[in-house]
Image (cartoon, rainbow, N blue to C red):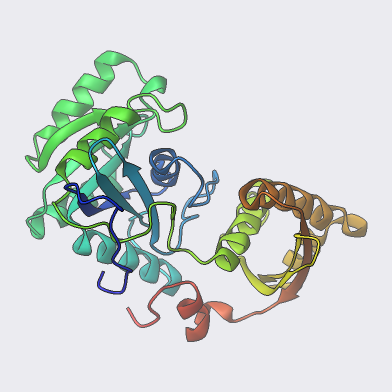
Amino acid sequence: MSDVLITSPEDNSSTRCGFVAVVGAPNAGKSTLVNRLVGTKVSIVSPKVQTTRARVLGIALDENLGSQVIFIDTPGIFTPKRRLERAMVHAAWSGAGDADMVALVVDSERGLNDDVRLIIEKLKENNRRAVLVLNKVDLVKRDSLLALTAELNAFDIFDHVFMVSAEKGDGTDDLMRHFATNVPDGPWHFPEDQVSDMPMRMLAAEITREQIFRQLHQELPYSTNVETDQWEEREDGSVRIDQTIYVQREGQKAIVLGKQGRQIKALGALARTELEEILERRVHLFLFVKVRENWLENPSAYRDMGLEYDV
């Protein structure tokens, strides 16, 4: 974590700053929770598992406590089979290893499944204690929640338990207050107006990838990728963004394009609307689709995603 910029508030009051790794099984709601705690979108969300690929930093402030909490949104942890999956799981555990605190997010509906057991056992092996965050509690009866809490507490690695709905925001204020109170004393690592370490070009590509997953998640594999090729600032204050959507087969290209190009136009409109909200200015978004058959075996593609190739 030594590559971050060290800054501090303008006054000389006591400050706190620390990293919290948010780990969990795929689709537990980690990215939704991080976005909620930060107060804006820093990580994409979709119903498709394994949407988050690399570590994403979301930076939140509690000005009353003088705390900067840097959340590491990690890929879902599961038993990997393919190279990309291994790289994603490696990134998740790297995030947990570097953090001051670990938060394990568990989908209350799914409960204690094999993926959650795997994570708990790995944390125990590394002598890491964690905060247990039971998510989606609005969808589960109280008796079931209490039974699940007791079952998870029996592993004896959790210092605190929080019941939240990341989607609705229920319980998240208490969770944020806990992190802000317990991160170490020290100067802030980022300027107070910064919410993520992700370059805007990469976030723009992620926004488009999110819409692809949301609109086409039944038809396309999660290996679809998006890259921002050009970012042009215009004199009128708007920005032109050119992006390429990479798929692995011609049939997938046809799905993204749609009949007479209708699907890619719809995807572009949705992504552009969200980008305009984030950037607070007009966006001209141009999308192209290319087939790149073996991109999952290309080391440079992994570097671009912030992943390690040989793990």
